[in-house]
Length: 128
Image 1: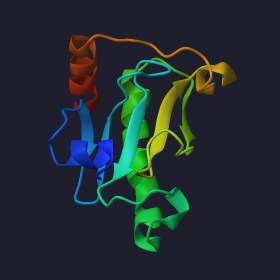
Image 2 (image 1 turned 180 degrees about the horizontal axis):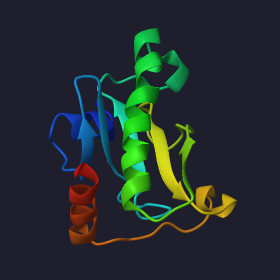
Image 3 (image 1 turned 135 degrees about the vertical axis):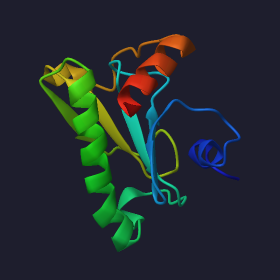
Image 4 (image 1 turned 120 degrees about the vertical axis):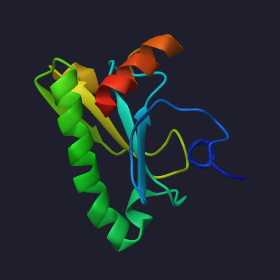
C-alpha cells in the first residue's frame, strides 16, 4: 500500500506545495511545530532515509537548502533546523523547521492546527 506521501506525490491527496523538481517535493506540514514547518520528500517511496539511493541522498540536501533559504526569507526566525526522524510515515523525509530556540524542534510538544487558508497563503509566499 502506498504511503500517504506517495499519495500526495500522485495528487490523490492535496498538499500545500512549496517547491518541486523531478526528484523531490517540499510541502507544508499540516500539523506543524511552527508555521513554516516544511517536509521534503523524495518522489521514490523508500521507508528509511539512509536506504535512499546514493544519488538521492546526495541531491536531497541542496534541494532542502534552497527550501530552507526561502523559509528563512519569509518566516521571521534565527535559523532553519533540519531533522530526519522517519517514524511518523514510512517514507523517507526531512523536516525543515524555523527556529528561534531548541524547543522549536521538540516533537513531543503539541502541534499547531492552522486553517487550510493560512497554509495555502503561506505556501504561496514561500513559492515566491
